[in-house]
Image (cartoon, rainbow, N blue to C red; front, top):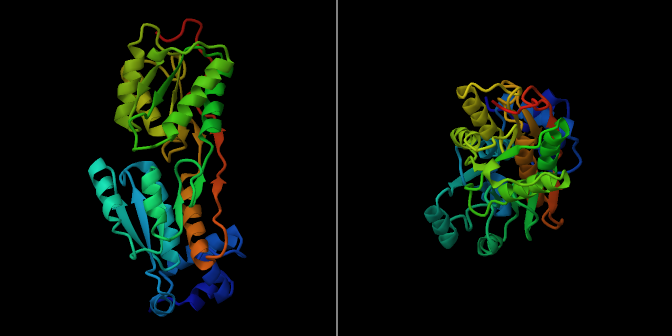
Length: 339
């Protein structure tokens, strides 16, 4: 038999109205209770009935989600968490994978989501014209990437602060030859690589360390790219004693390159990543932890709240917490640097 809202309420030890508010992202429910209800609803296979409410409200009960790379860890994690929140509230997801310039241009020219979705979660950064096109839909908009944007609820982190903590950690350990593996060839209009590079340069300047362009390499935000970038850095006339990678996947590629060059981490080279990927703890990676799944879930909840309370103002820019996690890949440099 199909589970009812009363079944969920009984199993969770709350009222049916509390279940309804929790699954639709409405206020008045604590995070602890909301998470418990979501877990019970998923366990019982409950989804909110939408046939009657759809007729009454004119909603499609569908959320449009735009992604640049559906197969990459960060975007996949955000998408999975958001979809669980939408599904528990009785909404379907209409996914658009806009990784290539051609598909992206075609999407924003035709806007196939018009009249088909109640809200849009964009995991890509639209330019001014694209932002205007999305606003013309007249539906709530949210994103988990980039900075403040008119008409959008932005759930994200402070990229500069996270990078500063990572690079400053290496400086405080005594490193002066600090390389960086960036992702400058990432998604179109993506500001994250720029923000993190600027923070890297600022920390070096504050520490009186002269910037060396030979200590920067593009890792394409992939494991393979990180390996190629680390190999490039090792070929410099004066290789780095420490490396900051703008993502954990690139950091893992760097670790693989160092192992293949028979260099020990952190004895020969220290490595810091960014994200706290699910495998970061497995490889002992020092990294800046950001709540990736929680960003997707919170963005989804805020969109649902906007749908249920349309007269309220959008949340604007919501900053999620970050922290530096120290593990086994960083240590003071050897007196003579890497061999």
